[in-house]
Amino acid sequence: MRITLVISSLSGGGAERVISIMANYWAKAAHQITILTFDDNSSPHYHIPESIQWQALNISGQSNSWVEGLLNNLKRIYILRKFILQSKPDGVISFIYSTNILVLLATRFLSYKVIISERNYPIYNKKSRLIWDWLRRGLYHLADHLVVQTSEIKNYFKSYCKSIQIIHNPVQVTYENLKVDPEIELPSGKRLVAMGSLARQKGFDLLMPVFANLHKTFNDWSLIILGSGSLETELKQETIRLGIEGFVYFPGRVMNPFSVLSRCDLFVMSSRYEGFPNALLEAMACGLPPVSFDCPSGPGEIIQQGINGYLVPPEDIKSMENTLYELMQDEELRVNLGKEATKVRGSYAPDKIMKQWEMLLKNNEK
Image (cartoon, one colour):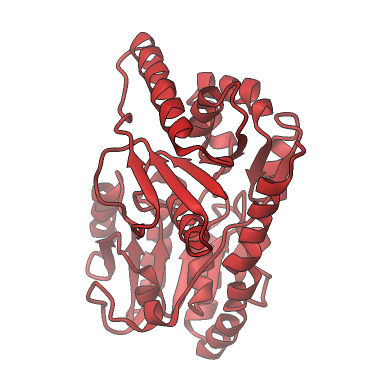
């Protein structure tokens, strides 16, 4: 098959990781893969082999007015259509809702199968981007299939598209990724780790006072937060205010998070909302016991309470603190949960997940 994948960029992020896994998987299976991104020709965060044709279209950027935005998006649609036609695909797969809308317009009246995918919980972006939400509601019916990651998100979009399919994210961990030396120097002692963009969605501002209270008892533990983002300075200032700046580490993004995760003792997810969190899957695949807010959506479908991790009520920092306290003082419990957590490697193996995508590409019915 000839498959064209469209996403805004290949920078570090959950959607970008999934699309890179998909591209690499299909390239190894001898499919002809094209990736179209909106950014410039900067090096991608994730490995893209030479067998994959990657076209950086250099059409991203902010607009200063609605008129400029309209003109820029018309330009994007024209360029997208041109490069999609050049790739001669059997199917087009698009990730993230603003990109989905542009792809649906760019492929209008073309005969290619178009599959779009939402990668996050939709309600939280609705108020800030009303025009895009209106376009999403009006155009999603043009897609052959809409792929979401949880039943909660599927229910939200039930009136948007005739074919809505749930396909979870794959997780892929290799022995080499686990055993290679980390790119960063890790603190000594026990390590609590979190991972995600340093943005409000990920709730690291909620995690700071939790760790500060725990550190009074567990002063041999450090907190590592892998990721980068606009709130980095603010979060660092908060560690100073709480008196934990020497025990909270912000190493930024790493190319191979598995080498770090596998050397930590406990994983925490403090997100206010998710789609289907890669960070949680990857930590569990490395054998880390997780504690997560039971936020919409994803953690509640991945974590089996008390078996392979713990869920606590959304944004309930006292429950988060109590649960982390229990695990930090009980190494045997951490080990047992971690062993169960590694079973996500089988449940979300790429072979299993990619078969579901291939069925959609081969299915001729909407």
